[in-house]
Structure formats: C-alpha cells, structure tokens
Image 1 (cartoon, rainbow, N blue to C red):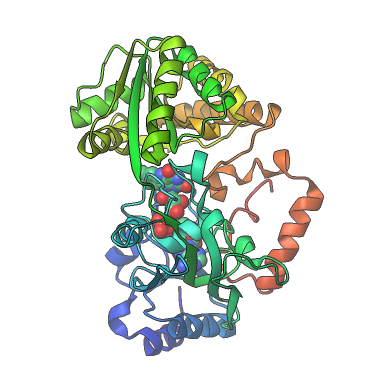
Image 2: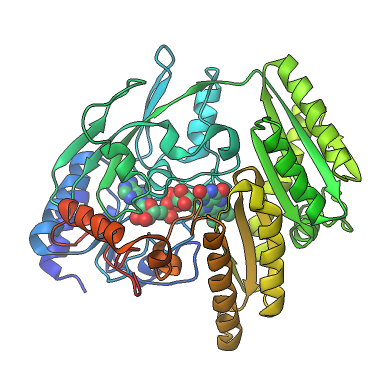
Length: 462
Ligand SMILES: Cc1cc2nc3c(=O)[nH]c(=O)nc-3n(C[C@H](O)[C@H](O)[C@H](O)COP(=O)(O)OP(=O)(O)OC[C@H]3O[C@@H](n4cnc5c(N)ncnc54)[C@H](O)[C@@H]3O)c2cc1C
C-alpha cells in the first residue's frame, strides 16, 4: 500500500485524473499478455519527461517501487508490479516528435504505437521495419525495453538494429541522453543498446531516436502449402543456404492453420500439415527473380501448392491470416502460453519435430508457429491454468523444449524476453560471471532496487 502522503506527492505531479487508484483501474493494470497477475498500488500516466523524472525523484526519496509499462502486450509479465508500488504507464506520451526525411530518422515518445509510426513514415516514402505481431497495439517504449523482433527480423533485424539514441530517466530521477541521431556513433559505451532489451529494469525510456530506411519499391507474398512439416522446414533451410534473404519467412503448422481458418475464413487448406508465408521486397526486377526462385524451391521441396499474390490487397489478406494466428489459437483453450526458444536456422525442422514430440509425450496440446527464417520457434501451448496437473505437464514440456534449444546452440528467448516464466532457466544459458556482471549493471543504474523489482534477474533460480 502506498502511504497517502506519497500518493499526494504523485498527484501533485500528474494531477488526480492521471493517478489511478480505484480497485477496478488497478485490476486492469495488474496483468499483461502472460498468465500472471500482480495488482499495483497506483497507476500514473506522465505526459512529459519532466513528469516522469519528478515521479522517479519522489519514488527514490520515498523508496517506492516503480514498474514502467506501455501497452501491456508483453508475454513475460515484466510490465507488472510484482512487489506492488506504482506502475508508470506511458500511453499518454504518444507524440511523433520528428520525421526527418533528409537524414532518415524519427524521434518519438515512448507511448507511440509501433504501427502508427510505420504508417506515418510510410506516407513520406520511408520504412520502419521492426514488425512484431502486436504492432497494432504495442508501444515503441515497450519495443525498446523488450528489443521486440517480429516478422521482418530475417532480413531487417530487430528493434535494437534501428536505435540511434534515447532519452532516459534514471531511478534517481536524473535525465540522461544516450546516442545521437547520426548513422554512426562510437562515443563511449553503447548505453542505447544496453537499455534495449533490459525489460524495464534500468531506466524509464522517455524519448526514442530510430533510423529509417527508404521504403522498398515493391513486394510479393508467396504462400506454399505442404503435406509434411519436414518439407516446409527443409524449404526454409534451402532458401537460407541459397543466400536468398526474404523480408519474412513464417511457418504455421496444421493446428494453427485450422484455428486461423476457423477464425478468419480465408480459404486456407484445412488438410495441410504446414504453410510457409514468404515476402520478398526490393526493386521490381530482383523481387520477380527471387519470388520465382523461392517458388521453385518450395515446389522441389514438396509443396503441393504455391500461390504468388498478384496485388497489395492479396498480400494483405495472406498476412492478415498470419497476424490473427495468436488470437485465433488462443480461443481454443482457456490459457495459451507462447514459447520463444530459438535455434540456429539449420535446426529448424528438427526443432519443430522435437517440440511436437515433447508435447505429445507430455500430453500437452500445441500448435507451432515460427519466424522460421530466424529459427525463432513460437510453440503455442494450449492449456488451462486452473488445472494443476496439466500445468505440471506443461512446465515439464517447456523445460524439455528449453533444454533441446540450448543443446543445439540456441537461446532461451529470441524476442519475447525472460521475465518471470524463463528466469529459472537463466543459469542454464548464462555463466555465474555473466549473471554477476548483469546484476552489477543493474546496481549501477538502480542502487536501491526500486525499478521493476522481481524482474528476470531477481526471480527464483537465477
Ligand atoms: C499477439 C501478440 C503478438 C506478439 N508478437 C510479437 C512479435 O512478433 N515479436 C516480439 O518481439 N514480441 C511480440 N509480442 C510481445 C510484445 O508485444 C512485445 O514485447 C512488445 O514490445 C511489448 O510492448 P508493450 O508496449 O506492450 O510493452 P509492455 O508489455 O507494457 O511492457 C513490456 C516491457 O517494457 C517495459 N517498458 C514499457 N515501456 C517502457 C518505457 N517507456 N521505459 C522503460 N521500460 C518500458 C516494461 O516495464 C516491461 O518490462 C507479441 C505479443 C502479443 C500479445
């Protein structure tokens, strides 16, 4: 519980309307897209860096815990106030401050929704590539804190690859700038990239400078339908081995195809074992050549049907199928947990088969989606979190999936982060030296431990 006098200090900064304390408001900010629930004591909505800094100054003086939050679409419970205190929600700091076409960068506040930035830069012929499935709701601040990836990672990389600089508020309340807006910058440690992916544990991000690309001139989407998941996986390996870099390379298995079709009725083949969705973009000539080559690869690797879209509208229809996948699958059972282990891409086929085998053996229902070109698996584990015995089986399956990914040189998380669900696995991937270094970095930024306590570094087992 926050003391009344502390609450009054917060209200003196943001006013009563932007300080929420009613039980129903607090409940709303007590969860994200993961399965946990932690209700905060207050939710504050700053509208400026000054307000965010004043909030942190009060929190630091009064030793109040603060948890930053964007849209709450995170999948690992890091936007939750795990030890109470205030949630600082950035959705009202949502202005695009500058789109600089001459130098190809944009400056945004953290509450800007990713797709809004994408649309705004598209209007002036520019392109912001990071494109998580949640782009229509997730904020730029959340994307920076989680180093969000998404469907274009295979060609264009992830949020970190587009960051030029940040303005941050330290837990003490001091405001600091990292990086610049220039294309190159090697001045000192790269604190911009350190903040990126820090899961809201080091600082509040209050301004973000991102680099932009020229908009690709044209794009083609291909849909390849398979009777065997092996053939789909092998096609991915062949495309990568051939040195072709598609803009996106996504895989859906039969459980996902069926759920998506029931949800969106796009005419997807219900008897297929797997579908690959591939985008190629760039200049018209190279797009035509690469699309033809990929279509060939798909056919020779056993695709029973390859469809190349002929229009922007058709591209969008195919992608809307993919974008609806999480939502469509989540309707099947009360709880849907999204795994995110990632393997070197040559292991993709074996990894998918292994996931299916592990889940089958543990009697756990699973659909597999993958950012296949990155080796980034997204097994969608369907269960009911009220069923203790089932959840124990789910946990066993997840343990085995993680062990498998690490055994082939993979990683715990490709893009969703560690948070509560994966913190217990950290020592399997990181040495004690590495973990101690991370804890030392945390202490340097936040010596009294008031920012996002109970986060990935402090959970059990890590
Ligand atoms: C349907 C669905 C699809 C998804 N698809 C993808 C995908 O393809 N790729 C991918 O990478 N992720 C994906 N995600 C996960 C999630 O959307 C991303 O992690 C996203 O970046 C979170 O943004 P958010 O604004 O919702 O942040 P939140 O969930 O509110 O917060 C996430 C983290 O960011 C911190 N944070 C938020 N704002 C700030 C700030 N201003 N300063 C400091 N810390 C801050 C929070 O403390 C927390 O640690 C998906 C989620 C869903 C539900």
